[in-house]
Amino acid sequence: MEGGATALPRLLAEGVTAVVCASDALALGAIRAARRQGLRVPEDLSVVGFDDSPYMVATDPPLTTARQPVHAMAAAAVASLAAQMKGHAPAGESMMFDTELIVRSSTAPPARTGGG
Image (cartoon, rainbow, N blue to C red; front, side, top):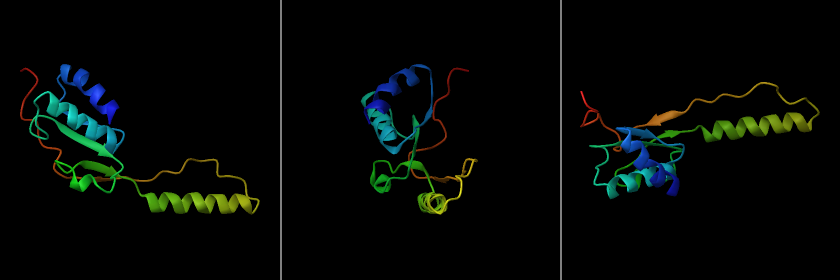
């Protein structure tokens, strides 16, 4: 959370109206920092997290976030490990998994514009 709170003032100085954070914890820190500066989420600043942690539906506002397909990722990792244990060479290519955007109440069209 501290990283999100620390980074946000610099971003706001650049005129951003939205931030996409690498984790839900960073997003919650960004929301806290925005409120310290008198901004409302999502009216003044949209915030998106990543992970869809279990309690993000209960935050204020409920956090828009990207959900990873954790079960599919775990199944692929187990299958790869099992294959290697049977003597097969590890796959040389990267595995790609789609994320799902879970839209909640921390995002909205910007209420302010950056000078124009």
